[in-house]
Image (cartoon, rainbow, N blue to C red; front, side):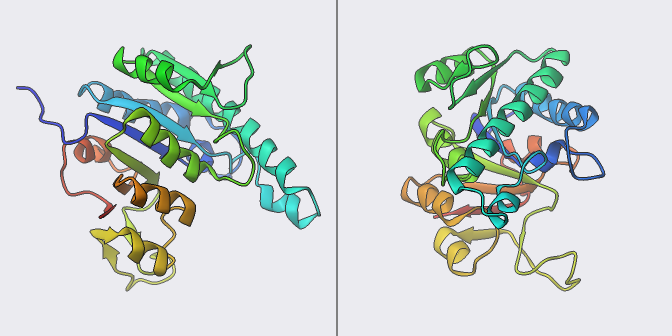
Length: 239
């Protein structure tokens, strides 16, 4: 029986920490393989998957800024680190039999294709997983904003923010046992309450273009598959 999908094309936003091991730093090949397995599950349902990944496991620009580093330099270093993460994901996915393409907003022809919107869409149409590195290619923009921008460009129906928690809470559930999880939020409520879903630029971009954001636990068994089928999972931020 064919599985009914709510979302046919998704953009998956991963933090760099999703690739790090217990120490919270660096690239753990086992974690990359776990992510590849989850992506493989949704690809097998027929979902087009594009991925934007952060760089917090390799470089935190904030540390450089605190030492007086130029903001643009710190941001470019972060963009380069996202390409390293993208290559680690590519390797793990291809070992699982997924066909992938890495595209980078900062051109580096030896390791990645340049980001070209129409080419990215064509790869998705052919069933390839597209991993988008290099952020937006511009300093002063986060990988959250890159995810929102790329999601709109490729025609994704939802931006899935994959985290370690099962949705958005009114306070930190690790510190407050009485924290309340939201099932649904609207964009302005998310911004006004300063809920740490994504940065305000990314949320505003999604709001202006009516792109829903779904926050879920990446490590929850079958969570991604349930999400693309439209089952209740995580927190949905929408109009």
